[in-house]
Picture 1 (tube, rainbow, N blue to C red):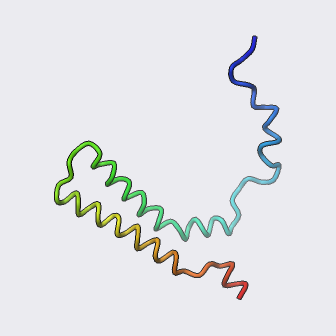
Picture 2 (picture 1 turned 30 degrees about the horizontal axis):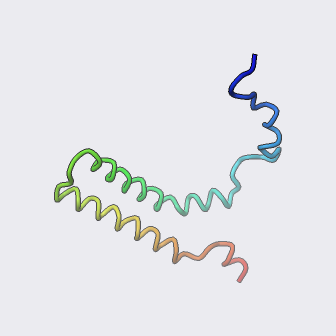
Picture 3 (picture 1 turned 180 degrees about the vertical axis):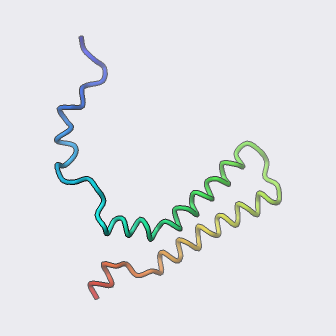
Length: 90
């Protein structure tokens, strides 16, 4: 019987490297550094989702603007932070 979905086992070794798939310490540090931006973006998304099914009130507009400004502030602070690799190279 021919299956529509092929068995993924033959490709499992070729798609994923045999190396350890855990993030490195540097990658975890980068994620931790970006966590305030990630949380601000999640808050903005929450506000946007809440406004999908109803017209925004004055308070909703304020919440949306506040969340958007928080995302911009977090992006600005991340852009102004020196990257660890650049600091070590200098």
